[in-house]
Length: 136
Image (tube, rainbow, N blue to C red):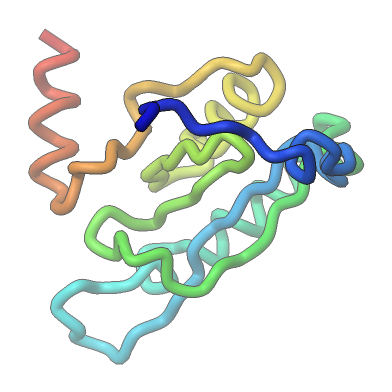
């Protein structure tokens, strides 16, 4: 048996994407005091709104769609967002973080490595340890 996966003709013939990029910003709300927290209480709504306005100002409005999302299940690392089709996750906490993601990822096509969340990141300490090591 081969380890490679063949792409079916149906996938090859898929239409072009409607948006060049689709951004989902978590705005999920949990009950107050929940041990995992939630992105809404950490400012997810305000950051999503800011991102939408800023993206429009950068002329990305027709190519990039920014939506709110329900729980993305990375509550401890929030507010979080994910950008498709790449599937790149970011933990953002400020308008400056949003500005950097918009400019670097969505305009320039690069990555904001200091804000990226990796699959193994579960707790803020996971991210902090990696960011601390990168700063040294």
